[in-house]
Image (cartoon, one colour):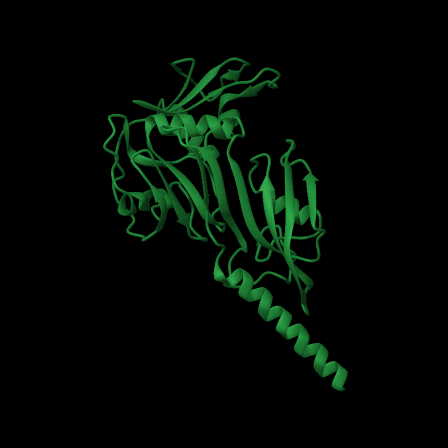
Length: 301
């Protein structure tokens, strides 16, 4: 059994049961049912011992997520763009519309063996492990650990908020040049900042804005909730978007465009970035042309 993620409960943590607490600390499991199964199978251990779902978590407890070292039964043969790869880590460009992991077969995790080289290191993981989450409709950079050491060290960097992430999005409405959003998500502190990239007029929405988003905390759906909360929902957001302005078949206009972190083996400062999908800029251009055409025809009339 290999420890793939570890967490020490900080001081000041309110009284909470293990099943509920563990849901928010491990990147590899993001459902209550998944946490419950992992605890019952002995994959989540507290202070080195098997624990129960009802255990009350206390400050100083060391909670570990372990792996049974069983390879996936089936490999999902989905080609993925590999942006970076070595013997310790890999970074892939996750397509929108597919979950990173979960109980279903069609996940990014099940497609990783089809796209990545096995690690030759002694502590290589039998199953490649994504070390953070990206919402299913979101596309972009996903960091993957190939060894147990890489998984543990990257997990610690995420826990200590040392990993910097930049997202590119198209949102509805007009925004200032930059701003900060301090708004709780699920009754927990959450902070994001944004910088305007460009703005275009739109007949349907008055304005569309392309922005870079920087989450300072890592709450579920944080950026989507924050942008909707200030009145600028992300284009194509079926959950937090404005009814009547959801684009059918075009997906969510949110891309994880850049990651900055320390390499878990060499310590080198890594900065990996990609361009957002072509549709982001193209849609704004088309909306602006429609606006210009509409206004020129109005002037003639």
